[in-house]
Length: 188
View 1: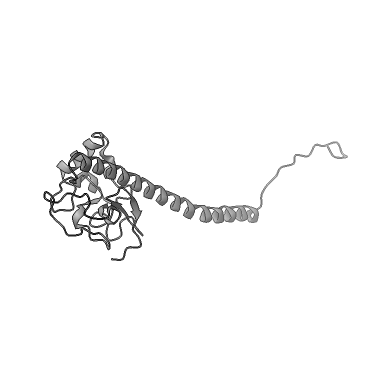
View 2: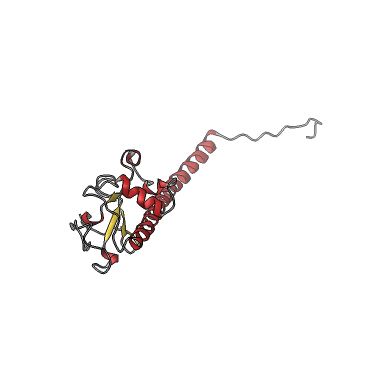
């Protein structure tokens, strides 16, 4: 109350300049946060892709060990042929969980039409250091003892399914020893 006995109602109002300053600050904060969120999303997709390839690698190793050192047969195309996919899925006991064959960064719905988002065809993947690139003796040459498994790429997320560079700036490669490596350093 003031000296005259009347009560004053205090209301807080923002001026237009104050509102514009607050909006500008929020805009700057959003500009700082959004790139970090985008990088986190890409990192999550890459981790998911690596996990998928590691699971496929495990199934391939189980198959190879159960079949006297021979890898699953897959014609000369880069498509993951249905019989091969079925064999790998069976080795993983994941017949109903074949989404491991779908790359999280797939631009088109290739998984639905081709059965895989990844380039499969281990002897034809031509990466520097891939010791069996071009070899097509599927049924006469067992894998064991012929090459260094860490230099033998059997599946990648590049090529016709992802464009030249796979997951935008890099791609992952599954090697015969079960490791998955970011192959961005490999020149094309």
